Each structure stands twice: as structure tokens, then as C-alpha cells.
Image 1 (cartoon, rainbow, N blue to C red):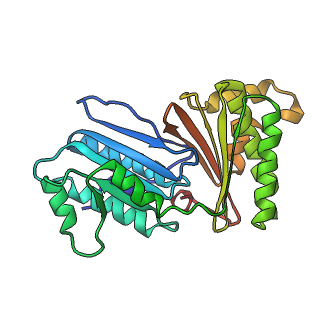
Image 2: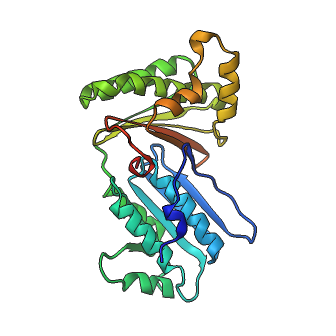
Image 3: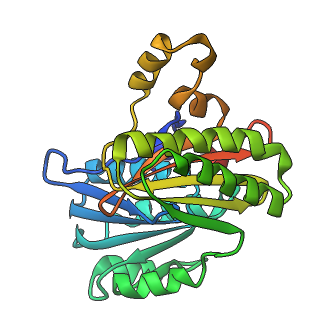
Length: 282
């Protein structure tokens, strides 16, 4: 049976959060600088509650620009492999979406769950004994083409440098219709990193089909606040209103944030496709 949460609609922004919940179960998620590879670590005795956490976190990851998700299940208590339906549902969702995502499982070999995953009919899951093995395998599946990336310092001139990267990307990949919207969004994402994170940050622009993905990774774990952006706009001059995160929310096909090692990644997607919805944003 499919977990109910797969059928419930998502509402942007797609903020992936981590932490331990009541009962001692937790789902921790980290992403690389461009959010193309996401690692999810699941801890605790398997239960409906833990399954719901996995489903919610994974769906938000799939709504973003990720190309691969590695799920570490070494610390899941599941003596009889009862969690199998959740992992199979996740595999189907990742594989059958408009932009298929590679889903890899990392599980101790001498467990019932590992045995049941290895002996499924149909498409065999990507299954590895260690995270190192999974990372090496996934690295060979993730495309490094159509990607531009630069590391910048937390100073105002970095906003222009990031906009120039967007312009270069749109020119190189012949996406002129996306240039203005992408540049506006990138300006807001980088301005937030400069003003609030005050750390060096990595800017990534990459393409998947007619979609342009923008990502800014900084060293501050605090997520952006929509309410704060709204307050700023109300007090700003008329010419400046409509900017900030409200602008990102208004013109991006999708946007969100994912934890990263020692910081976070804030991402946004612009698309030549009209009516791009949450299930297509990956």
C-alpha cells in the first residue's frame, strides 16, 4: 500500500527540515552545493511516524532540482523488513516522475530489509552496503554538463557576479526568455546570503531540459523568512516593493531550501514550461 502522504499536494516553498521528533526518531537531510545530490539519514525504530517523516522529507527533496537521493538506513530498527513498502513507493515515485531521480539505498547486508530489497520483482533498487559505495556509484550517474558554478565572498559586488553567471548560462544554453526572471531571482538569493549569512557562498546555475535551476549555498543554517520579507516590502519605497522573497515566490516555478553541511542551500527553478507544478519541479 502506498503511503497516503505521496498523494497530498505540496505547497511552496519546499523547505526541508531536520531534527529529532518525539519518540527519538529522526530524518536528517543534507545536500551538496547545487542540491543535485541529497543524502537522507533515517534513524529510529521503524513506525508509521518515522515513515511519515521519511515520506514528507523525500517529497520535498523531489520537488527541488535534485538528480539523486541516497538514503542511509543503517540506523533503522526494522527486524522483519516491515518498512519495505515505503522504500518501494519512494523508488516508484522517484523513477516515474517527469524528471526521474536516481534513488539509492544504503543498508547493512545482513538484515531482512536488505534481503527483501534485493529480491524484489521488477526493477531492482540501487542498493549498497556503505555510503562511500553509494556516493561513488551516484557520482557516475549525475550529469556534470550544463552546469556553471562559482564561489563568491559576502560583499555587494557578488550580486553582479552572480547575475553575470546567469547571463552566461542563458546565452550558452540558448534560454534568452529565462534570463530576466532568473537574474532577478538570483539577485535576491545572493543578496540574502550577503546580508544575512555573511559567509563565503557557492552559486550554481544548471539546466535540465527547459528548466534553469539556481542555487546558493552559504554557511548559515538559518532558513529565509517569508514574513520578514513581507515586512520589508511594506516599509520599502514603492519602486522597491515586490522584491525580496515575495518576488522569488511570485516568479519562480518552484523554490525552497535544504540543509547542507555547515549551512544551507536555497534554490529556485525557472522554466520555459507553462504551468509547471510541484510534481514537475524536480
